[in-house]
Image (cartoon, rainbow, N blue to C red; front, side, top):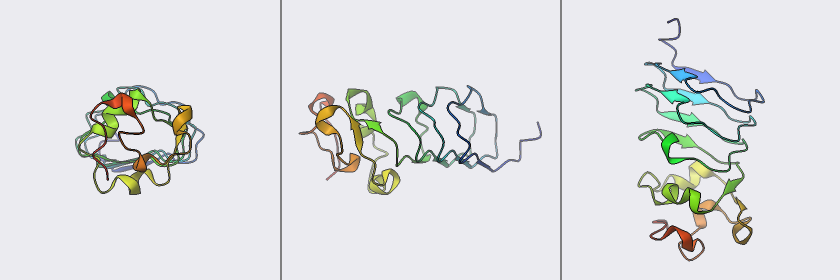
Length: 142
């Protein structure tokens, strides 16, 4: 009850490895969550629930390899750079999403693929459908 007016949460540099489901629940005033520079390797579905004013989530420099579609929150800017991304078929939904436009390179920074072997070291925002053939109608990025 005492957190209803909370606007920003900064949990940077806390060596967090996971977040419990419902951690950010029913926080109507919450606008920004910052979880940069932790050891997060996954974001479970349901960690963020009913936060209607949420606009920014910072997840840079963690150990995220994938970002599951059910965790994507429309109209929320996500800073995802500095994670060891797996650039396989599991992430196709992400690359095909309409939310990825001109801001994509700035949000991902110099993020590179950590796997699969053929894509190791490739910058995420430079990938195209000829490099990741498993996604079908892939990237709309020049």
